[in-house]
Image (cartoon, rainbow, N blue to C red; front, side):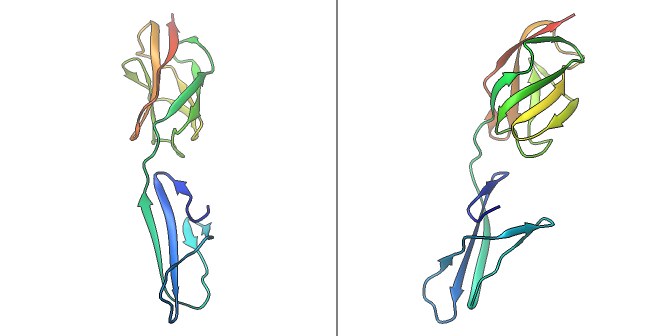
Length: 142
């Protein structure tokens, strides 16, 4: 992680003020060790570290690994903005929210087609706090 990077909807900034200084300086590097942000500043009297909320973009679903499948089949959705960990997004097969995830990353989610998904052609979408992806067509077969 670098200072200024956005992660899970937040941006890190660090500023320092040297002894006798009149202007805050933007720090440019830090490390994340065991979940803690660490940074060094030289000859500093004061420093400020802040996390500010950023507006996350809506998820984008670009492809499905298959255009059809039976209930219980594993389907991969590829795209971006799904969230860095499971629980940030939900996959929806028509009106049915998927509850069985095989794996989840920010760019690829593998799910099982819900047992209660309607048969026939329906839309698959991904939803995050930022909104819903455009739908991809999928046919649930018997």
